Image (cartoon, rainbow, N blue to C red; front, side):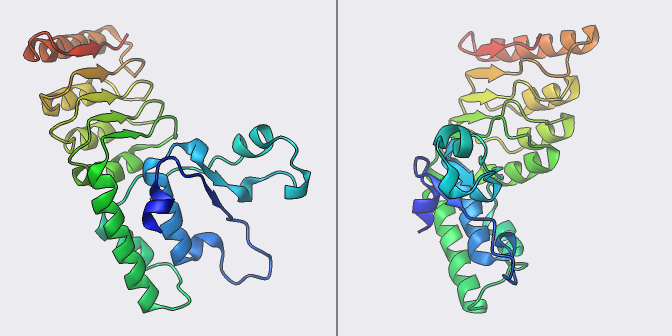
Length: 239
């Protein structure tokens, strides 16, 4: 079940709106927390739908794309370490109590080993994540030893979030996209100081680097990194 929910191309529909008489909501339940955490890790937002956001009755849907797919995109969460997941799960309810808690914790650990452990590309662009999510992702990145491409464009990472990510980038990473965030020269400098030598594509475009001093410092850092790659790097410089 963990691999079915987590597979990149399997569409998951989360029924987050429960009947009024229900004692516990979707987000209070252990199995639901597992479902959403696993489904968020690898798949694109178009494959993860929150039907609780549906604005019309199911019987009134006449255009799936405009009434469901575009309206019900669920907010994806960063993947969690097994310890962080177990701590989160301890706050949730299981009908079968401790037995199901141990089962779900084990299923998540299996997912981390088999899916995140084998992932070569992760795309977390356009999710409106902030530095808190950057920190969670940074904690999980060591679980992805084979990661080659990481896209984090169009979020809200500041210098703090970028520095946290920089410290945990996998050693074999080849492409990193951080365009359209909110960091400046301090974040770019921290990133370039920790950037794995395997990186060949680096996109820092359209960040908080508009002032002449910040822009100049970042350009120098990118140029130095490119020379370190002996001309093989493709550095997309911030304007």
